[in-house]
Image 1 (cartoon, rainbow, N blue to C red):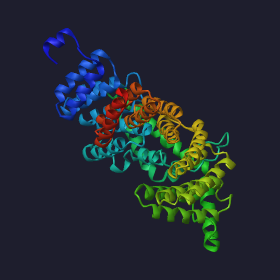
Image 2: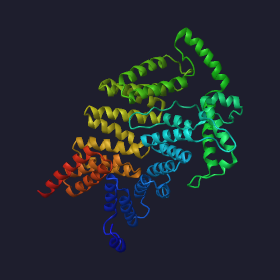
Image 3: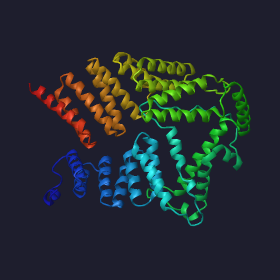
Image 4: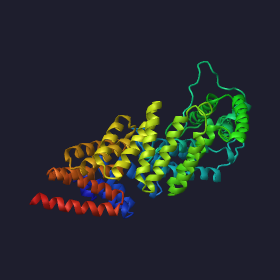
Length: 491
């Protein structure tokens, strides 16, 4: 931007300066990009996406202080803005504040567990802490007491558009039951997580450390106490499952009966189930559908032989396993058997009134119908799921898929309406991928309805997202569609 233009004020629009900045970033001209983003911010002060974009440039130029300031400003109105959380973590990491960076990587990961950036951030921050941090002034710390319990717990709760594994349901805690006070009991209950609790309690003893604050003003003492509170909650969870003595007694009895009959679990059924569900899901995620299927069928056979007394939430576990089997069969293109297993999951969910399990089953049944071209059946199933959808990401995906089915059925008004709902959900969570998908769907529906101007506007928005995501295939396809739409509009 010239000095004359700077004196007279911006000559173009906010979106133009943003696009100019994005292009300069793509060419790695970060100083010029900062100028463009700064000009854009004079037109829309406080725009959080623009602040994040400028913060990234500051990081590239080594100006961590300004990078952190922009990241914090992007969070001023929305503390859960995941792009701002990630950028704040990145700025803190480049400043060498690895512990604080780790806190914000974790916060972002809890909000958007499907994003790889947060998982990688957690990993690199933990490695940096282990490699560079010695000890606080008054206590020696051990590497084994890192903050990995966040990662362990988050992985169990990870949600993906594809079938999630729902954790085994906890029994309701009776009123008046108290949390165990004995350290020995706590150690037994937490297992390997106990070292994390010890580590955090040692941190609390360092008076110099706990007086400190994060750059955002949050007291470090509060951060540590929140972590300890999490572990206390884990202790209560295991206590709610069964008292220590009862679990040890039952384990011994079950082991004896297992050796005689092979019909009861070899040890604690909860641990057995969770461990195997994780392995089944990991195999499927790694592309090993046959291995995942075999494991799931083996575990299903084992669980079917257990009594309700040994596994009180047997129906929920069976539903999880039928879901896993169905997903593996889908990857193996055996749609009939996949549908059969997902219908079994739905039947169990309805019998036991398990809302999350019902939502999962409807999700998967709809996917099977869509894959085999039964779009009307897919719509009916997915529309039943709509009231059960939670969170912007799930809604953006669900509305988009329903809209696609309506488009296939040439019901273009319904396709446009669901595309608009998908786009709104994507905008709420600032998810560029689903903004791209939804914009294309709306553009296609508007084109079929003969609304060429509206169609072009949505194709142009989709094109902006595709370029921002550096998705060359999508960019080429959208440019071609846009040219064809313009030709139709002039005929």
